[in-house]
Amino acid sequence: MKRLSSNKMNKIIFIGVLIVALIATSGCSSKSTSVEDGEGVSPAESAGVTPNTGELTEAAGITITDGFGRNVTIPKNVESVVCSGSGSLRYLVYLQAQDLVVGVDSLEKKESEIEGRPYALANPQLKDYPLIGEFRGKDDPEKIININPQVVLKTGATGQPSATNAAEADSLQEKTGVSVISFPYGSLKNEEQKAEIYSSLRIMGKTVGKEARAEEIIAYIEATMEDLENRTAGIPESEKKTVYVGGVSMAGAHGIISTEPAYPPFLWVNANNVAAGIGTDHADIAKEALVDWDPEYLFIDIGTIQVGNEGAIGELKNDKALAGLSAVKNKKVYGVIPYNYYSTNYESVLANAYFVGKVLYPDRFEDIDPEAKADEIYTFFLGKPVFSDLNGQYNDTGFKQIPL
Image (cartoon, rainbow, N blue to C red; front, side):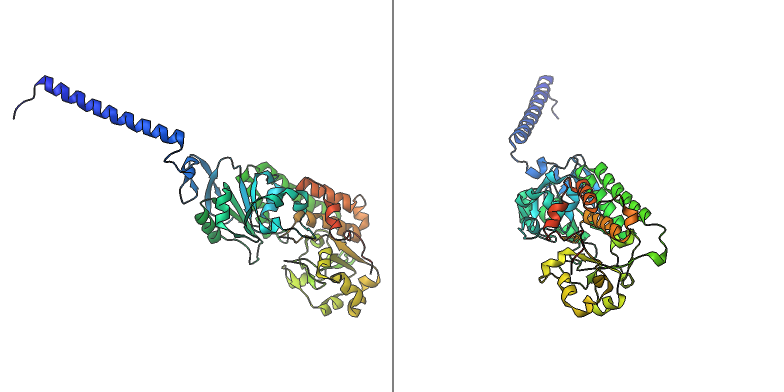
């Protein structure tokens, strides 16, 4: 084989180096132009999101374990969200993060003659945001894509058909390419469901950078429940008042037979709920059962007036059997604020408890003005004292004796 001369070898090496340099220079130039001009890079990629999956790269976000055990990656600093399902937006208001909202469901936009959601009364601007879909979590993926939030916060009423689940959250995330954080709403009826409230507040708080506020809310609820229970501790069983709450709202207004066997205000002030023996879920009882129970005190959820003919109040006036109840004859019928309106308004539950305690055991609530206490509670949760506005929706019948 013919050996190359050193001059020829040097030329070949020089040409090879030159070609490599030209290729490298061309690649850098192309890459620089694409990044600066935004050409060849999708909006999702530029935001650190893997196209079509909604998953952020580890460098761009943090991972949240939601209420259904799903690990979801979200931006480190979330600046835009939408809330899907019953109560999700309420929790965001509790966390003082409503300014992050960029879209709402159909119920939030609906103009109602009676507005029973304190968080909506405190934040009328929420009606003005773009639509993400129908209420109770019936989302429209295309609308969410057009709004382009960084995160969807999705929940549903615990134990209700509208409750969300992991598969539903996965499906929405896949369809929209947006991270979906989902969780159960919980309730104050028992320890298990109360733990769901606290867990969900913490998850949402971590998602939107309001972890400290979440702990404030949890501490406030615990302190309030403890205060109520301490005020009525030690009452002999023979001196505990027998009570019933009727007309309780549940997916709409109802009449006298609609009740809560585990009505939290009764639990916290150690009253004897005559319906307590029929479980913990919302129940419709027989009128004959109420007549047989004949409680000393009747409390009426004033949301009942939406039924027509004054709802439960009209029944107490016009039904002869109910008119014979001891509470009716002794004028011990009182109005309480509705708390079930697009899931539970916990601030109204707590406010009702102080009113109930004041009625049943006035000596133990001497220092409490129920309306002032209600506004203290609403201000903590919502930033505004909305009791008067809320009660006005129901002809100012809340926290009063109802004349029959």
